[in-house]
Length: 301
Image (cartoon, rainbow, N blue to C red; front, side, top):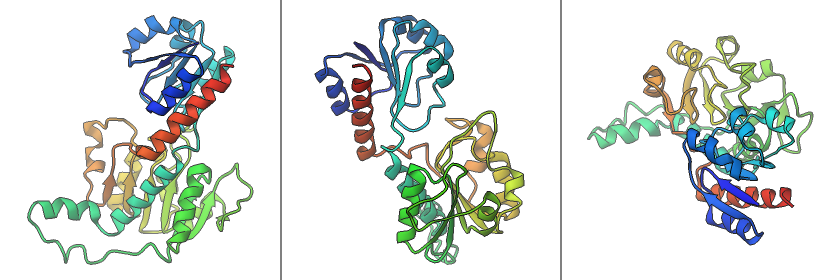
């Protein structure tokens, strides 16, 4: 079978494909080039950059498998692919630890002013008094929105730090962890920290809007390492400015790369930002590459 690796893969993953007897083309095409070349391939492997649209699927008459190295499938027209009898694969658990660690990292960053201190000290300042009122994570309540693979890894680390963990997930009825499952409103009202670990569903819109911010405990800290759009950036900015949200850690944005319209949020003094790097660790990339390659080999048998 001929496989297009559109957004790159770890060497170990490509070796698995070749050892199974498949021909691989590891190359990034423009959207126009992709439409011209996709008819050659039995499988396309992507990350988040390449968009596998209805048009791409229609042009890919030989396609048997669409594989996404990572969790989200928002860059793939999954319903249409399945309608056409094409298998859609992903790796929902391979990057969970890396994303969870970044979420915890953002909590530390905003609680101890790491983002601001780093910048100001490099400018020759000594802002010791300005940042003398940090807070500890220990003893605080963390509310996790979505207790799936990543949410569980966040919970494990938070429990290890001495936090009380509650979670809301309409699809989960029980968990083996020391986590109390609560309603969404209970989570909003009782959490000192809220960490988002749910998919963005376009038809439903943001899960965190002004309505939800209005139900939160005053001074809550919000972390979003899930998907851009899960949190309304406009409403989050308003909540930061009126003190409802005391700080936020953000790895994902409504527009990526961000536009000028998002600068006020990104440059807010009580916001810690990273450029969508939740899964970007050497360990996660290796797990993703190997796992998706193994799934593709199995699916093409």
